[in-house]
Length: 256
Image (cartoon, rainbow, N blue to C red; front, side, top):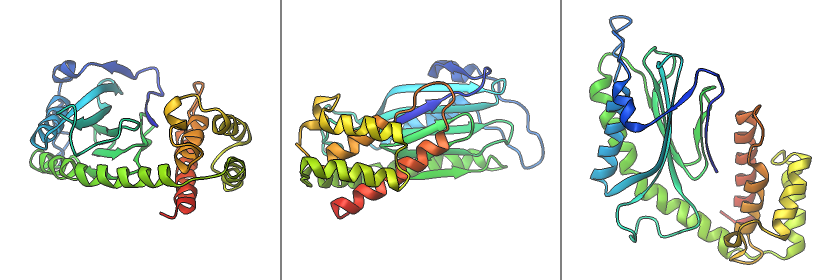
């Protein structure tokens, strides 16, 4: 579950080539050093390339009159098949953000559950890396990016192991009902979401969610479908909190 959210009327989608056209303002003080948005994204792509990775499904948005940048991309190996990411039923996502006006730090976040929002919600379930945009950001930021991207194989391996554990943990049909009620009690699902999760547990909307029978994998996907935000006024902090509660419970159930 990944979300790039725009919350104000000034936020607008922008294509990657257009990032280079956004003016980089002068420094606001002795310790302020604006780093071009285009260079920022290119640094990420170069780090991916060095590690044999590539980005797909890129999406970027700018706000505050071009002063803030938010983005998200799916990442994977360049080859169609490789040892880094073997699964075809989940995605590794990279989120990014930054500003020219010192309002938010430059950062990237990784995970299968990533939220990047212009209301400053910024989180990934597998790691987050940030740095302030001060004097030497031009030398620090590329290194930060390379260091974070270099961890992708380990991150992907950890995610693969966790999801394999979910798929191999068998559950009886009635156990799922009890587990979902317990998740509701722990604050992972609201009452309407609980009803939807039970329906997804009984009859998944996607065939791949039922591929491993009644399992912790099926339970996780039932919760994920139920948790997907709808409407315009979405409280992403609440979505994140519930997602964390769900993951913690399913890890407990699966013995992780």
